[in-house]
Amino acid sequence: MLKQWRYALVVGLALTISIFISACGSTTSTSSTPTAGTTSGPALGTPGAYTCVSGSLVISGSTALQPLVTKVAKDYTTKCSGATITVNGGGSSTGKANVQAGSVGIGDSDTPASSAQSDLVDHQVAVVIFGVIVNSGAGVTNLTTAQLQGIYAGTYTNWNQVGGANLAIVVVSRPASSGTRATFAQYVLGHSEKVTGPSHLTSDATGTVVTEVGQTAGAIGYAATGQVPSGGTAAVISIDGTAATAANVESNTYKFWNIEHMYTKGQPSQIEQALIDYMDSDQGHTEEAALQFVSLAAVQASSITAHNAVPAPAS
Amino acid sequence: MQYSQRGRLTDQVARVVCFVFAILLIAVIVAVFIFIGSKAFRIFSEGGNPRTFFTIDNWDPTGENDPTGNGTPTYGAFGLIFGSIVITLGSIIIVTPLALLTAIFFTEMAPKWLVRFLQPLIEIFTGVPSIVIGFIGLTVLVPFLSKAITPVAKNLGVLGATAGYGWGAAILVLIVMVLPTVLSVSIDSLRAVPDSVREASLALGSTRWQMMRKAIIPAASTGLGTAVVLGMARAIGETLAVELVLAGSSLPAKLFSLGALFQPNVNVTAQIAQDFGEAVGTTAEDAYWTLAFVLLVISFIFICLSRYLASRSVYK
Image (cartoon, rainbow over all chains, first blue to last red; front, top):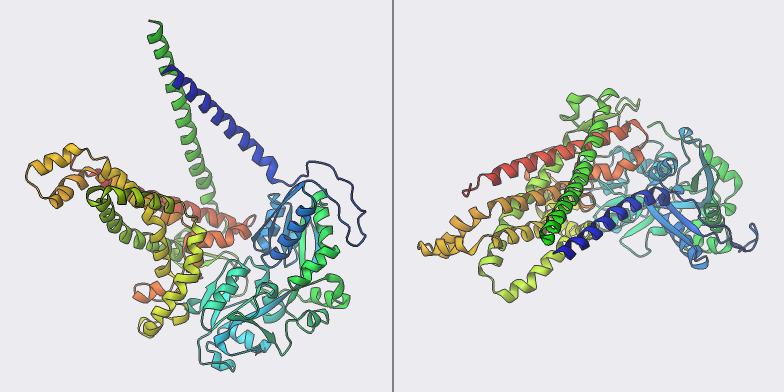
């Protein structure tokens, strides 16, 4: 009897202590301060070079950029065993809000930070090609800007009004926190989406948009083209007769693309800088191409300037 | 003599340890309530109208859909709250009789080997992550429902292609998630009824069914009530699975029709999950705290109600 109580006491005390320790520990471990110094590696700036920094890093934000960052982070942590990198989604606004709040080290975003977030440092890492995706049953492979505007304003409700099958249009949107949605409104529609009711679905991530468009008859949505499987029931269509290809983005004839940002709060820490540099390495560029991203250098500087000059629509 | 003294000492220590742990737990619970409560009423001093908050269905904290174009936010959570209540009650109304009858089968009728085989299965099911069930719901249940409803979509006044989304799918998903919990607790509470109750009832000449209905269920009613409460608490707080199959942005036009079950719809938790991250740091954040508080209050009301019903036991 006595022994049992002793055990209970010891276990109880151990539990209490561990609760306190873990509670204190979590506050420090969520922020991404690297713990150890830099191990020697090739110097920065040379192609194919990378610096190994041990430590842990949490990234959140854009679900369009997420596959690329996940892949690059995986490559990096394979080469540098001391680093742990966690990549989460959440949407562009979530990423920027999280990095500003200090809960993550890097916030990914499809859209620039607002003027209220002036303490965020911008690292432009790639160009993402978005595509309007349509369920194969709709029978369209191209839509004009005017037709898209009509669909997203709720004027067109059936595909036969835009030259497709006799099928009701179902609009699959992302929530307001999405950078893809903001890019679509800014560079394609010129106004915000206005469809509600039974012909409107909202989906939290790029991947589920593709799933929903693929399985819903007459559905239309938008997603990063790298995440749309070819040959599926959801296919990327052309806008104004221009296909969503890297070449058309580089010449800015295709409008639906954006610059991917990785934001840090203030100057990046060593591990943050190392990962951002690694995005720009040869290995990073290979991953970019594989996931249908375009490297920033490939896009004409004038296109990037022109693209950034388009004002956001008044919501 | 020494032993009894030590015994008293360990008793004291045990009492103190238990007391400290209980206080810790209660402190955490109270702190959560105070924290959310302290943030819940801010929105009403920042442009939120407490009267329309609960009566209109227009949740637009970013002002994106403001018809005047000024971007004035509107906080009308009626649709969200209504949605949460509908899917919680809808699922629990179906789950309760199902779980009760299955639990009776398990404790009173089923052969032992079957129970030994099935009960671990059910208990494992209580721990299936909600995102897994949600994704099955999105990729299997939603297309199936759409196909099933499409022939009668016109009669219901809904769109066939999106008929799979909405309260109907959410209720079905919640049934799968809540049933194992309710069933497990129901089985335990029926099993806890002493055999003397069964024997006394049978000795008085009742049939097996009379014994179950008039003796065992009333004796176990408090436990059964707890089972339903736990189920409801899980249903109302369920987020990911429900968000995937609701996929809507506003309430349906005709609320009290069968068609309302089969079109994209809203609830509180899905809205919080989708937009809270973005709202952090803005006025809208406070509106989401209010929603969280409302959710707490609703589940509190549900729990009080069920406790009251369960307390009217014949064994009091």
